[in-house]
Length: 318
Image (cartoon, rainbow, N blue to C red):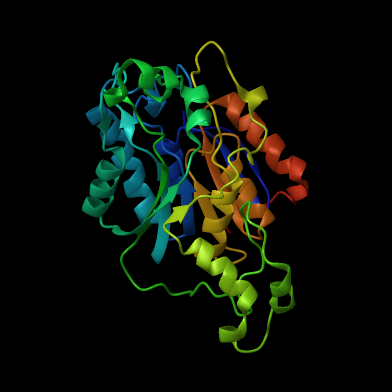
């Protein structure tokens, strides 16, 4: 299979193909940061393809395939740099209200550590319970469950963003000489701090950047705009798909700005409709995305090009 089609400019490289086959073609230590959502081990199905990891026959089989990919991410990542994995606790298959959860994040952490990554931190992304109920139809989140038997009530589990660092010293520091300049979230930066934006003096005085940093440094992100996502509905395929909801741009932009420099390469091996590549390019990075499903790939190309990010075709890896 390898690469079915590709769209490559000096700003991004988009590949339609199986990530497990495309990744071996990416040069060693050429990726400065990666961020992605893996298939949630059968919780959602994205296509009917036997190559799709969401269609694995078992939890163990999923991790067998996923491990190969993470080993490739480790190989291609610059020493001392990071990989971010978006995930959540997964309901047990066929479970009703109160049926229990699988510690999917914990298994991801243990696998990354076994490969050689260092587990650095975890961000929790708050989700509004009614919104989760309406999207998932989880019985344990319905108000009726309180009436019938509240001992079986569930919670709207947070999303997690796990950060892993490759061993070795980072040869290129990620620097912000005038502090952070933009905030990705629903909170408003106090107007009296605007005078400090881009402050070139002592950064201990930069109250604007300090305010942003305090929000980003929190382990609990409660103002991520849940619907600030790229267009995705045209990529839906009702015959073989149960779920599609892109990762929020606030999560992506916070991560990319903190963990990479302008001009560096940001990878997503499960590109979907192109959110991570879009977030990379509009923030001055170069995006690398791989997507198996043609309808998602086509939507990703449209999203990235539609943002005014089209560039000159060239050899991205030269």
